[in-house]
Image (tube, rainbow, N blue to C red):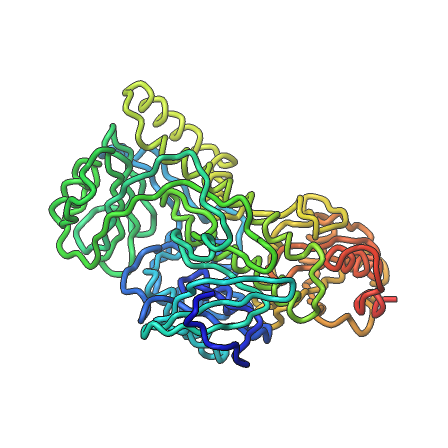
Length: 520
């Protein structure tokens, strides 16, 4: 620790979050709404004025709904219901989002400034305010917690004791550096011009647009509210790094990539270089990484912020349980085990998208266009593609903390029902949900009372019939839904299912837990 550190005071917290972008704000909300004491700090004196990430995909909208922010977010968004791929003036392929099985079969295009504002407002309603002009300058951890150094705008440093520390502090993460980790990847990097501009174009405002270009790099266009759009232009290697970013340069880049947009006004221009990389470990003792601090990749598909927000949703309920029960066992390790493969898949997917968009050989370009046109014309292929973009394919079937049997719906899958909105139930009750699936005969009641942290969710007969078939419960049983909306356990015997699931969360062996005792 630095010599300027003042003695430890009683200013302690359960969880300290470094970084108040969308990922850090989602994590703070997940903790605060569960009654966990949380502090969130950020080096910036005020929220960013740069729009940065601008797409909230379908699966992330499910989680935003749990936070109680969805209606306000959609009010400020342009809803996108599909995507189109272009080669010059030719539309190679179009895919609709509306055919996928999702609670929200669309994406929301919204400036990051608005996303952060809505999340911060909700966080303030829960009594937590971002501590601005405050940098995490160092930390040490022991078996019981983390001692963090916080440096203010005046240069004075103070210590804060927290049970856990989470770094959501971006690609240059101080927390990652303090953990002795680095982003590992083989990709050299992609150079992009970015702009939030207003202008005239003829493209469908209800779609995202990708533009393939022979050798000059991929282009992307995302319509926002009004006449505002976000555009990306991938640059060829070798352009001088200090070249000033101007409207004229961006317009030239759009023209070269066949993007028929005439810029009238620019709100934000920048140039960024993004590498594909990921840390080996998301957890080291009581310190965790999420978002860009843990993984970075191409903006193709608009998956960066979404992957990070879902990191936060996954980690939030697990940290809350650890704080409230002191019983972590393998639960906290499951954060890395569940989320690391997701980001690895996103990196692989976006790498292939980028490579497909920058083919220089005319024969290869023609083959790509034909394959996309034919392949995405097949509903099953198109749905699989959209599932990846909208992150509806995310599941944790191989997680050590899900269990039981299943049919087409398996433990670790996200639960979608026709009549029952699970996300709304989890917004009201941020714990586990227990769904009693009645058999054809007399329904077996759940144990009364249910263990703390579990609330019964009643479903309609149509949803119950769906679960009997999809969950492999022809004679009825139990489906436990985790606080993040994924199925934690499926069992034909409800009391046994509750006991088995508790063993998964708390670790097999040792003393009988309160939950095990409650269900007999």
